[in-house]
Image 1 (cartoon, rainbow, N blue to C red):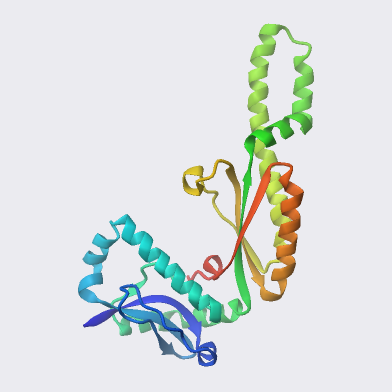
Image 2 (cartoon, rainbow, N blue to C red):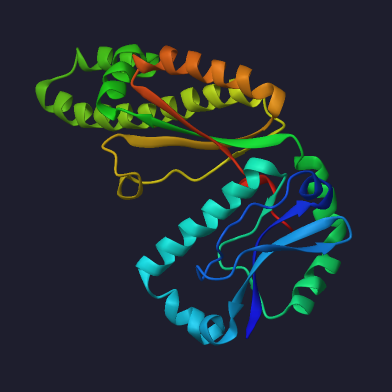
Length: 267
């Protein structure tokens, strides 16, 4: 008997009445998802067999990287499907309740917060901007146009060869330091321009090359919550900035629209 409830997200009841929930197979690829109504909001869930998804069984499954990858993608696909038609508070992957009663306890406890959050998120969507940089190109640019570095270069002109060698090494370190400052300042300036179009923004941790699989370095990672009517203007500004910063060695990569993953966290 299916006892556990896997929770994908919370949506408003009035939106569900306007647009019926599309057909979608649940996490086990057997049970269809369905709504559980609760005072104007709907918990979108699928049933799971307790024997297959209890705590010990889930622990074993989540030790399998391929299983986690497949099911995490399923969860993301489900949330995206909800986002296409409804305002949604997306849940984290593997949010499982032991029973309907257990789920309803949580809905009761967080009802006011969920209801208010759905009202606030209505008519909004999330976009993500990652900025990558070509360090070699930027290093040359920094070395050629930075006043601090120019002053240090002039000092070197009047030094003896032995002293010049030591100071040259210091200069290389200085260029690296100024390069990091330049990347931060330029990326922050780009972000500030885009933030003016947003209801809310957040700056995330940069990913390393092992994660991105790219040869250039990620130097900025931010998310923006936009009103639907601001999206077109926002996209136009991103396109403009992409052209402006291309020659300097910056690549702006925008993705979206996404459900409000970063702006719908419950306390």
